[in-house]
Image 1: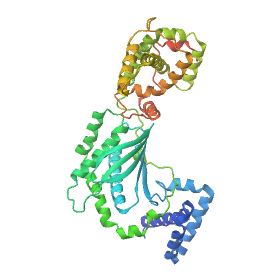
Image 2: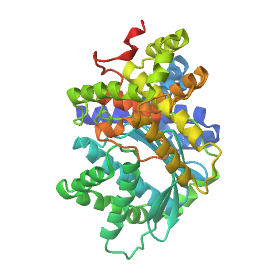
Image 3: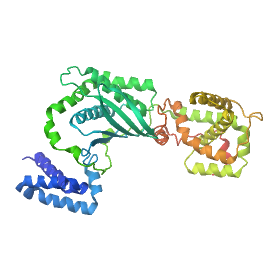
Image 4: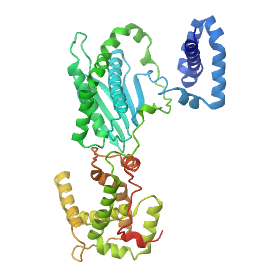
Length: 438
């Protein structure tokens, strides 16, 4: 046995010892199975594994089971036990989780989807294709269907999505995978587009180029025959004899590790131009004061407003962001008064009327004819709310857009700071808040 083979052999022995030692501690229901495997090994266990199992148990006592599992495992242990199975991984800064019925056929179909998705993710990473993805948690529930249907978002809230996937079982006599391949590609495109901040048409063009220029269609064909190969190579009788679905599900999550090659892009975006960004900030200082001039003149004399600005600065907000959000808060208050008491048949008609009023107040210089005396607490409350929404409002200025009905505000803000200096860039020009000392 050469050095490489010897190293692989020793690593295999240690991994076997880890399973034997840790498995019953993770789930007591597999204790009997582990003991059975040990007995089947006979002398081999006593001579090659017993001392390693003791070593692993000592390590567990010293560092703790969870610490050891986090260091050795890529995903949660025993995720293939129970009525439903889960496959989870992390790639491109996103956590992916696919859940499905733990039967023979559904395993083949769901594993195929995971393989297809992972091939595309690796291609995106290796080709440095920058989709400006937001770090979200993507949970998929698989349903078998006669054909692939558009995935449905069941629930989403601030960066966490619940999807329903409709995936087909390919007939054993099927010869042409091209249509199936195209449909799978469209499903993945639909998912990635939703968490990409690139404009829809720009995203679509980049995604299609992966298939046209990088031969991704050929790379995914073998993955697309995965479910048929699975059902040919895995004996269904043996699968069912394992009785996976008769075990209780094991809830013992570990920290999902991500290969460095699959890390999310965190360098400055090619869309970022600092000079242009600062020019826009100068314009915002100029435009933001005009619609709230009277309100601002009143606030700047109020020590409570000074204290609020100082606190917001301590929280990391920049003066241009505070002023812009103040303007949005004032115009928002006035627009709400405008629609108050009116009856609207649809939310769309309400939104249209509200947005029209908001834009009108934003475009006009504040005067005695449109001034409204707003209680300070109202301003304080909505100013903080508008600051949280600001990262969404500025996306178009970077040629970006959010396609989600409930955007991941925190994730967008973090990405804008890493890749567009959102919480760093400012100007020393006309800043009406400069009179407030820090």
